[in-house]
Length: 266
Length: 193
Image (tube, rainbow over all chains, first blue to last red; front, side):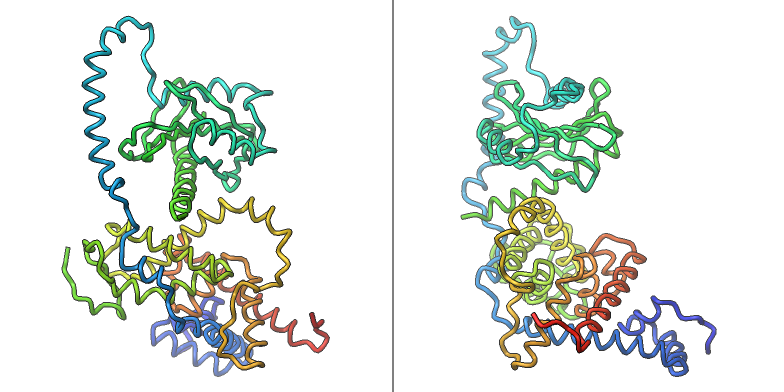
């Protein structure tokens, strides 16, 4: 009978929560019959459970608000524009692509340089400013609200500096940087080892397809980038791929939550 | 891609592979009261809780291809809610830090304690809410999922994305803390606020 002894802390919880197979539960019940101290602890847990349920169960009977009933019956509202946006973007991209290809070829040949890819831009920007010990940013994080407002205004998109404190990176500040055609916003972060990473946000005119995370390595700088309908995001740093991906995921998650919160607003 | 009937609410709920665009979904509606309750426990505020439920539902619709037929819909929704909450919370942490100065409400002010309770019940319930609120969110979540929602410990680990050992230690700490709070409040020397 008592082969399973001694009882662990986990056993007591599992027994009180009715999570054990019948056989094990019987063994424990037998032990508890002999051990009043242990039985008292189980009784205390059960009493707490009952108290919690008594306190919280009445909520279940409340009438449900209409907005939640609606939200459980309909996918999040997409406007006619949103439904058309993807096919339109494809069409527009094709038209623009063909037009640019045709009319732009002379111009392209004449120019010295061509527009650089987003990942390359992110890596170059990171390399340039992260190396600047004293002045990596134009505006420091001490004035985060002003920084965010200013950058949002300049790139004409509501920005948010993700909070990476949980990963050991604190916000240093930000700056406006030159993009291919329009300015882009750069947020710089730093950890305790003075390792810096940066987030580059570029506003796109034409809503592009969403992309999965893409990875690139340019001149020793790792870059994860993705495009989320109105913006391109790139997170860059001289850290390894796995570490950077973890950071990129957190950034992506926070931005998605922020976007969801924005779109909830009427 | 099995097509199963709508009878699954009790024993492991389902979402069809493809949901029509606007049809009341009985399973989601059935899960609503518990989602609202969990959201209240997370946020400590009825209004923010309903916003959280709404965000969670929107996310669930978006992610509905990821739903695995045959698993518990409620646990899946709790998982989404936990993630949405964690993301939003870390975004807002700074704001909270700055915004807490003008909050002159007492503890548990946002809970809206159920009205049906009698006067003496209300005192005890208020105490329970206050005690829950004083637990760290991580412990609160485990406690509610185990004690009130009666999820299996493994399921709780899946919902919160932590190993079962972490579930057990949080549960144990939460219960220990509740016990101590209770002991304190039962003492005759308790200071009346």
